[in-house]
Image 1 (spheres, rainbow, N blue to C red):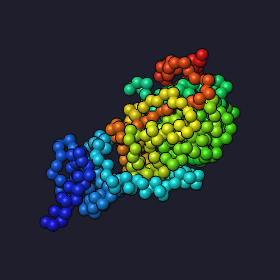
Image 2 (cartoon, rainbow, N blue to C red):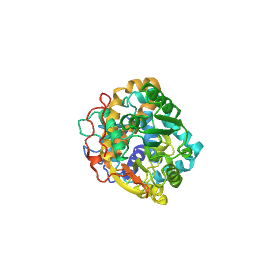
Image 3 (cartoon, one colour):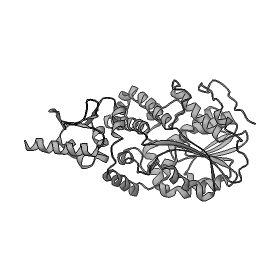
Length: 409
């Protein structure tokens, strides 16, 4: 009887943490329930009392840990249920846990290499299972709701190029180039020369091989080095999906790198996951998926641009597009789930399922945003007169089977 009372007390505590979301918690084979919620409320099933105690002691970390281990299950549509839970209050414990990872996961030169290796150097074969053929691992741009992931990723690459107002013969530097899709797109369709920096060895090797295979090696140079070591002068600067890895305390240094690269006459684009209000990244995500990660609000991002007198020309929020991108990735991941288990084990597979589903839920709920910010130096003369270059319809095809020439004035 005492054990049953303890179970109910612990479940009540967990429900309190989830307020104002009604939550049902069940433990063990006896399905002891908290007694609250509606038929549509999220239902969390815990394997045993030890799992219940673990969740109550540290929900910020142990929710993900228990799910990965198969000791916690969520009934129903995973993305939908996680979206409901994202409306719960953030507790002080979650903030403290994430702050602790901020102290231990430095984004110094050495720390950044370690953090990036943890996520991006798992293996190219793993990402090939569920990304598009170009291996674009950032928010896609869906021209229509019916667009495929391949079409949407091509459209995103082209949108970035049009926002940067690229013209033949110009030079571009990219900080954090992933598997190289954007740099190659710039060179192939816009006639620019690109230097792309990345500290992920696996990604750089993939990008170099693709450039060689497509005859673009003379136009795109992939450099295995930290963004802080960028040197030379360029017409444009691009960073897609890297600001999240820079670290809040390094924003002014990042801005200094940009200023050194494009001076007062260049222009640039920052594409990054952000928030509406300052908050640390989920503690479990920082522990298992993105060590060193931080998602800034726009005001914080301005610490990159403001000290160097850069003018913001355009801001767009693609949050709904990232939610849809993550759902596409999750669908593909589920289709190859058994293969992921075979290669990497069940704990790894469940961890990544939760990460992809949680990301989709966070963008759906508005907990996370996706910002694209276009900026230019005060002496930049190469700026569009109007927004026609953004409204111009890009190809609804993948772009791989045609030569599409952007309209230039």
